[in-house]
Image (tube, rainbow over all chains, first blue to last red; front, side, top):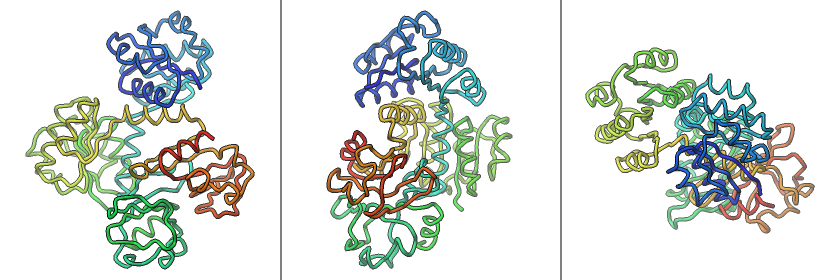
Length: 219
Length: 216
């Protein structure tokens, strides 16, 4: 089990604490708003009401010894810069910092944030890609160029088994699951004998180029 | 090519507009700030200076024809609520709205937004999941109750072939791809494929089984 510190409990910081707690991790949560600190109490190993821009506060909490600190000070650019600087001086091994804009991000990286997070920009880019690709469920960013997509089967697929359709041979993509409506269930890695129904949704994984080609073919 | 509307060009909206435009889509970008409209011009098919609370302006822009409309008015909750309402009334097919608080998200959903994004919260989940399970690089909900994860090959199966590892029988998950350290991807690997140190696996399975597999 690791120990984390989350400094600043806005929508971002608060949800980081809650999720870490749900995953069985210990978190020191810090904010200068009494109400927020009260609200996080049940989810934090320690909930601290304090001004994190004070070096003494961070030192007293021994934040140099946590596994990672997350700096998420909403709209306060100068405060987040100071906190990252202090953490760096205290020797915090890993620091994630949330940036409000590009320049803020550059400064945070320069003073030593391990990773800078741009929620608006990253979620926007993901949404853009998803909308442009229509049926895409999600991308596999660590297996670059591969995606998972949903596909309503074209008429020629209906009533045939996956073996007969030879989807992997013909299109180079694999059927990793089938969402069935009748009955309402998901068949994971369906067998070659699975018969495709009109109401099914095929969930496919493959290289983007192959998935694109297949989607064009069935349209 | 599909047609998209992006209403509100703050950090979020301008990035969505750009991401769509760069993928060859038609993008109508709207904001009431002349500077923002000017800046999006090179990255949109049409940049329109208008107040999105102005129903008539939305009608004239032909926004109801869009395949999807993204409502991304920064901090103005009222504007995003009104725009979502108007879009619904005008028959927009798909509305993706950005929320800034949980209550805001609820209101948007009630009004008929097809999807609500909440960047601060969505990124928070992602980061926390990564911190709690450092061997897991990415997690996806394939559909209700089923997830796929990209993860570093767990130690107990390193050195085994997939056949020997018997992932399905033992752990209830299926490996759908392996990425080798040289970035070569083996999709739909068969039983003879050997898992080596440094491999990244993509596995799919029921949520609880996938979670158990991550902790091996």
